[in-house]
Length: 335
Image 1: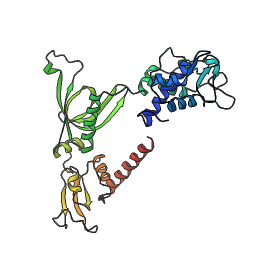
Image 2: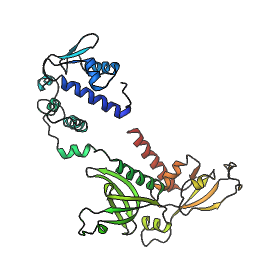
Image 3: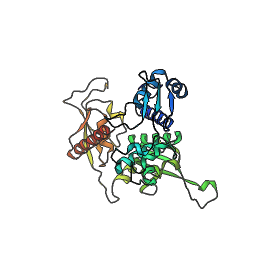
Image 4: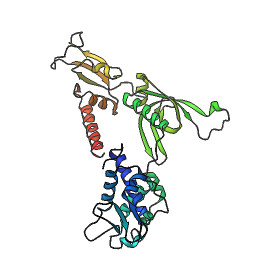
């Protein structure tokens, strides 16, 4: 339904909130709401209020009526013929555990008060299942502050460009009273950002401690990105005893892609092109280059981002590119 400025998921949540407000207003027998008054109190147009009323009265499924609501032909009002209580749902099959969990999560996300009549839907006879508070909290992700969003964005950029991330990491239980010891400087190669019930975190390789570490985003301050030294890349991805760095051959049909990304330690093997970078390259005579292949997602991700202008003949790298493309497609389908 049209709303003031909301769209997509936010718009659906806004509509759900308004419907729940109306249901609560009609929870007692004889309760009555007027469409014009609803429009005035909720800041809606007449059309939006009319569509809300229509949605509220369109829940009938044959002989089963979940709500005892009536109205006139023009939907100018809605009245409750009976109280809204669990007995109305006696004819409905009891909720499964999954349905109970889903409903509890929705109520938590929409901040439905504990004393709301809607909370009765989580109790017998509608549902006999008990859902733990910890599980609900784990599913319902809290709002992210503007500061934390900015930090996540910097981390994401560093991951995409395979840059080094510098930041101050705040301690929670520092034994020192001096403020200078409340945090320390970290230099890491970021791998990915993850979220769980304890909040957003960064999985990274600590270049000073020479080991993988997990950092809480809300404890990271003064984030900066900088280019990554090739020796630091070797330190991160290769065992200490390894001396030879595996390399893969890449083919470029456009010179601009040579500088589009920071291809670490890229070496031109063959270049029969003209010095004029504006001239198109003969597809049969691409630029041939060699780059380190550290068996992570960085190189496959950047080759995919070149939209077919960069390719390889390395079987292992081709396999990694295909696997990454399939993973990204699955993520896209699940959104």
